[in-house]
Structure formats: C-alpha cells, structure tokens
Image 1 (cartoon, rainbow, N blue to C red):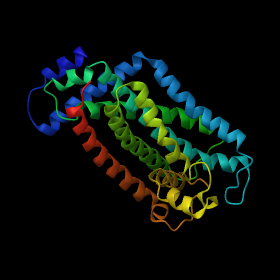
Image 2 (cartoon, rainbow, N blue to C red):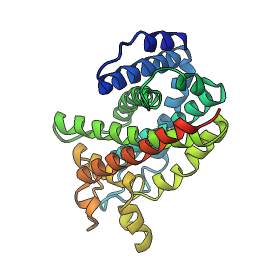
Image 3 (cartoon, helix red, strand yellow):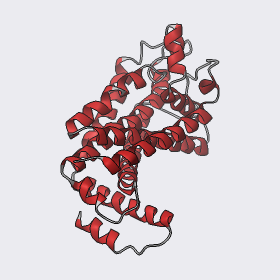
Image 4 (tube, rainbow, N blue to C red):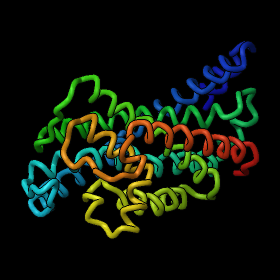
Length: 281
C-alpha cells in the first residue's frame, strides 16, 4: 500500500487521460505483486478449469452427439471453446472477492483519500485480473492439447479467438467489481459472483448443442452473450459444433461478442465507479 501511495504522490499533474492510465498501472502492479506473493490463489484458480477439461472430456466424451458424431475426440474439440469461455467468466468471482476484501480492510477508503484518477483503483484491479486470466488460459490451452484438442485454422484466427476470450473475461470482471462494491464481505462477493454465472454458462451452447434444447430455452441460449463468445471461438478455432441457428448472435458471433463485451464494460464500469465513490468500508 505504501508503494502505491508513494507512486501516486510522485506523479506530476498533467493530461487527465495520461494520469488515469498511470494510476491504473500503479494499482495493477500492486495487485500483481500481491498475487505473486500468494501463489496458492493462482494455483487453485488453475485447478478448477483443468478438472472441468478432464472430467467433461472423459466422462461425457462418448455420450454426446455433435453433428451426428459421438466420437470422444469430436466432443473434446467441441468442448474446449466452452471451457475457455467459462474460465474467463468465472474470474468474475475472484475480482469481486478481491475488491470486497480491500473494502473490508479499509484500503478502498485509503485509496479514495489519495489524489488518484476516478476509477483507477478499479481499472488497475481488473487489469491485474486480466493478466491472471491470460496465464490461466495459457495453461488450460496446454492441457487441452494434451487431451486431444486441436485447431484447424490460421494462427491469426486462433490468436483472435483468445483475444476475444480475454475481452469477454475483462468485461465480466466489471460485473464482479460492482458485486464486490455492493456486499460487505469477500465470502458474500464470491457467492454473489458465482450464483448467476452457473445459469449463464450452462444455459448456453458451451457444453451441449443448443439445437437439442426446447425452443424457448434455445432462444435464451442463442441470445446469451456467453454463447456468442463460444460460437465465435468455435468458428475461429475451426472446431465442430458451430450452431446453425438463425439468431443474429449465432450468425455473426464475432461481432456479437465484441458488441456485448463493449456494452457490458461501458455499463458496469460506469456503475462500479459510481459505487466506488460512495461505498463505505
């Protein structure tokens, strides 16, 4: 905390945008150092998605019909886009818990007393979470390759898919920031960050083909922002299971995912900054 205070106080006033960027990077550095000093947080964050990959691949791999095929290898390729997307969105709970912990310890009040740009604390926190999410995705991709996942497109398209996943994850961490600022304890933030994520991730095309759902449920799944990211990744990876739905997000998943992410960031960042200014520890 003292390092953040010294860095902020030593920053000369200037361009407000530049000031905001510098303040955000200082806070992001503080959070990354904190994560490095508590490696078990990163390790436990890696265990859950790896378990999902292994369990879904080998338990459900031979029983799912994907495009008329029940081959386990086909389901593994179908599955990975959903696992990647689930992993980046579940970072929401960690973001919310971290901010709630800072509030509980009184750090948010101390940050507000410093001559910092509005929202820099929250932006720095979400950027640090983005770095951790990128590390998790890297490890998860290696595990996916080991269990048989493959891509069938160019390097640029594969890279675009991972960048799209990171943007989606970054957007969802702002939802976590709002939750973290709205509750009193880190435990409540963790629960509040997960309770709505399960229906969002499971009422989607992530783990099963949405065409097998009842019509009203399929409609919800097809317009789910999470489904748009999964559909976009399958197209960019060249993996099986791309939906044939007529819903606009399924027909234009890359654009839909980008639009959803930008709207989520714009709305929830604005809401989070307002809550940050008035929140009491």
